Image (cartoon, rainbow, N blue to C red; front, side, top):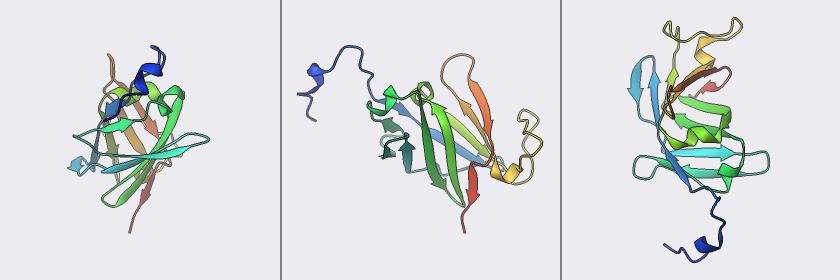
Amino acid sequence: MAVAGWSAQSATAQESKCFSIHVRVNGKAVDGPQVITLKTKQNESTASLDGGCFKVPSTLLTEKALDVSFTVPGNKVYLSVIATGFFAGPWDVDLEDKKFGSEVSLPKHARTREACALVFHVGEPETALVQTGCRTPLP
């Protein structure tokens, strides 16, 4: 691994962060993604699972937020505007076909099978959010 250019970076440059994604569909754990796509307004890159986690390129961590997309068995997931601070620890992504548990409240117009409930295990307390329109069934 070459580190020759590393010393030229400023001391404030952020190091690559590593995070994992754990997915449950209808309460049952499924195989998480092996590859994710990270998007900014100008750029797109992919990251592969390496040692149980995804490494985010340090150049992307200068952005305020990234879009993240991936596939898991039977579903394509597109999470928009995820703050880069959440790329420092594990994520739980819950997908439901009929109804989320009482800890998740969906907007009235939302369809359960198109929504994603996320918990970011970064900092205390952990952060939970719900995104609608983020899940597409795959044939």
